[in-house]
Image (tube, rainbow, N blue to C red; front, top):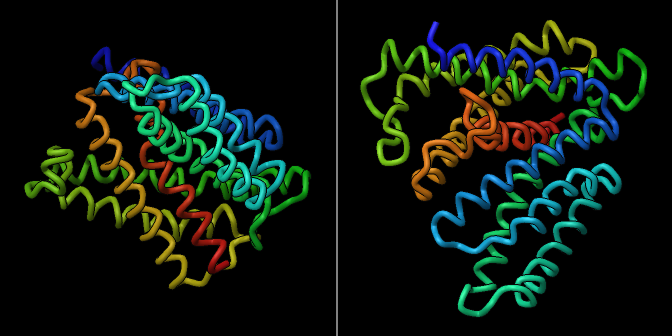
Length: 284
């Protein structure tokens, strides 16, 4: 076993149970966990942007990303919308007041706003999966309700993890044709096909065994759900690869030994979780 693999397993051995406990706790604990992940992800985004010479409002952006899940938790999607509109007004005003014209305050505000929305806003859309707000999402605080909410929130994450594993194994065994050579030369078409197959299989089997009491989608809709969530996870992975290439870095940070940074762990999840929520909101 290589030292890097040992590091990866050690971090996963602590991180996965901790994340599961935070999700199961729900409420303020869960929202705080989402906010902390969003703030750390934004700080990595800001550091990468600064490496390209782009000014970013690092501290205000991290605070804004941290508070995004709280806005949705307190006011639902409507509250999140009002919060987002306030940020569009507040961040440019703050940039004009604190950033010299030579450092391009409007570009700084635009980059900051994008980072806050990309990390904090997308993560906040996972709240209705855990806390209610969907026809099939439980809202009670009983043990059964907590477990169902936890399993529902984890569904797109498990799809993402298993699809990523299938893409890695399938790509190594069968991959010849690159999927997006200019963005990520190691990803292959065969790996993407394996990811889609694994994602769809997970979308079918996971609810059947773990969400039997709350899952209301039919077979065709469930297959479509798996395709959409897995497809978005692949795009999210490629999007972060493109971001790192633009910024000339290998990892978003060294926060998680063997895994890179927070954004490296969130890349596909930032697309898969909102995709799962929107799909279920429209069709459940």
